[in-house]
Image (cartoon, rainbow over all chains, first blue to last red; front, side, top):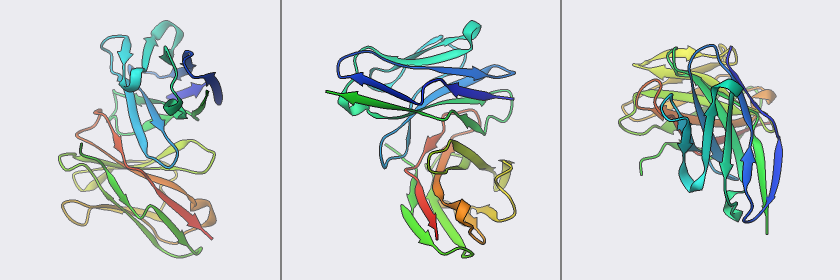
Length: 115
Length: 113
């Protein structure tokens, strides 16, 4: 069965410092992996996705994530945090060998950015 | 940029009442979904819909829930007799086809009292 584990429920950084949001996945097949962001009172916005092409995936707003099969990880990083990055971040897995219709969400990591 | 739109943004209903949440998926998308997020919990898959029928559903999606595409643009989620535990944010989503990127709406916040 597929699952994702977000290792930190809350991460706090200062503006201008690097961001690291950790995610480990479990999947029997070749997974598609995503990071979604949810700003307060907003919907879920796709940041980036991995679908078995390049292992380093670049997304919007300067975020990127690296797929590491040996570590079953898909951590999200950004070199320099901005105040507007404060939001809830979800690591998500989809089993591409099935119909691919159901996404499995992690519990989310709340990112706080202080000035 | 095309987006998934949902109405209402917030609804308060009494326990036992029927609720219909409405969604307009992105126009060229063929797959439609409902997810929900109970306050403080994970986003959970409810159902996916393709070619006018349910293609996949979770254990949560019991007989109290139904989905419909009543016309060429709307996609609805009906909860027949709401319970307190149905209080959640309900997200509609769509994708061009299975396995493609899923785009989410801003959600409909349902409060059952």
